[in-house]
Length: 96
Image (cartoon, rainbow, N blue to C red; front, side, top):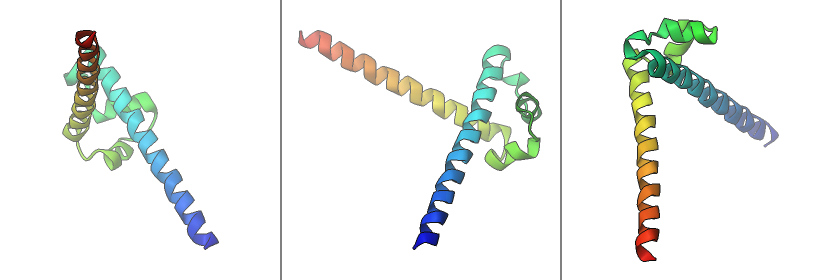
């Protein structure tokens, strides 16, 4: 039982680290795309910015297109949340 709990905790830590690392890659990619455009984004550029190997990035994202797709998904999530908040605010104003 103690061993299962230890393995579970270790698995949780690994997953949190993996998520954190993935978010670092995405944040760096977003910074590059925002400041210099998509053509400036390369896996090597991200690796250079973060001081890691290109191979490490490919463990998280199989291609540049996969990374860009994840950036787009994140942007759509932000837009969706913003739209929901705006609609809720308008509903409040209209009900007054």
